[in-house]
Image (cartoon, rainbow, N blue to C red; front, side, top):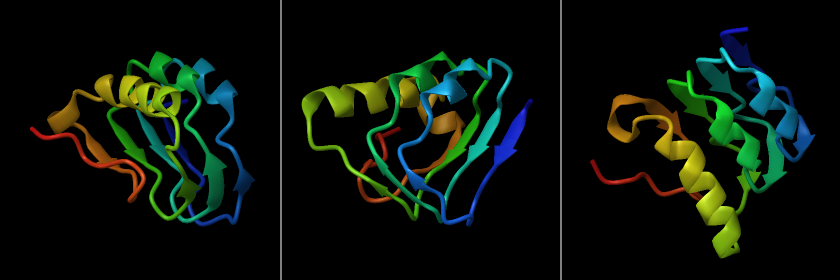
Length: 95
């Protein structure tokens, strides 16, 4: 699978850690749901990911560990070269 778009489905709960097993995933769109919690560290295994859209959810980064986990995921996106819409909880890294 190269593209997963589950936008606007009113999904609740955390983003599944099993997404980290989708090795060839290039695009992940889960915006406009009611997802919450922290990003699973397994997302950092998505080395082919070029686009991630998670805005419009209830993700929170309250702990240092959660922020580091999210930062590891984003570092794989090539920062400025990738499209990422993450919402207020995840400030965009400077280019």
